[in-house]
Amino acid sequence: MDTLNPARRFAPRSPLPTNWCWPQGRGLALSFVLNIEEGAEFSLGAGDDHNEAVHEVVNEIRGARDFCMETHFEYGARCGYDRVMQRFAQRGWPLTLNVCGRALDHTPWVATDALKGGHELCGHGWRWESPALMDEATEREQIQRTVDVIRRLWGRAPAGWHCKSSRSVNTRRLLQAMDFLYDSDDYGDDLPYTLPREDGRPHVVLPYAFDTNDMRFFDRASFVHGRDFADYVIAALDTLLAESTQSPRMLTVGLHTRIIGRPARIGGLDAVLRHVAQHGDAIWVATREDIARHWLAHLGTAR
Image (cartoon, rainbow, N blue to C red; front, side, top):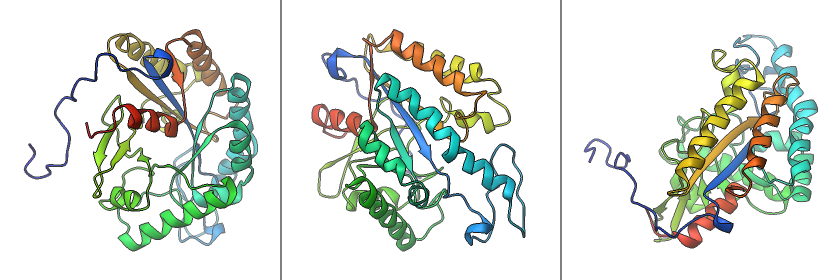
């Protein structure tokens, strides 16, 4: 045990029951997450004290509005969103939409589309910022503010939450007190796990992934062409599919409207979706809420 931080998890996980699987006997649960952040970025034009510095380039304009950055984010809402959503509508596959509260306020049709398409809205912060340095009262207020917008536009509160970057030391406790089913603030596993709440009920943690994620187009050119994204994600799918013949696995593919929604990159998503369709009998494409509920129903104790 780490005596400095006993809450950290280094030990291998306990084996799953030998007869356990995802619905319809499938071995791999696949979660596509489309991040809706447009309008939640920092901008002097929105009254903030600084501009966001990461878009198609890394460059911060200080002391003046950054119209370059602002329109790069607008592209995601105006063009990239439809380009991505059409592909999932054609296949009838559900998405989890990680929505920042202020972004959803700017793009309310996202909630309307989610209701029509059977997609999930998951809280992603009020602003596109990490809460790691927030005081507890501010973080609580921002979580509640985001929940209120989602409830107003989608009709119910979100079941899940995912911070940008790191959560704070208070985040998980606040989410549990507000009765969230799950959070995705973990990057250390290929399967969900459960933690006990103060009242003894389980809280589900669904690990997220930064590697199978289109954000790497903005990460020192890790991905350049659409096929770079496709090749990497398909390699992860194939590895986990092989492993899932022995024990179930889960994979998250992170998407952003302003990134994968660009014309030169969308072909990479097309290739991934074709590959998934070819293995449809082994892959359960599901929202994160459905994954969490299935996990909780069958493996509800902390593990």
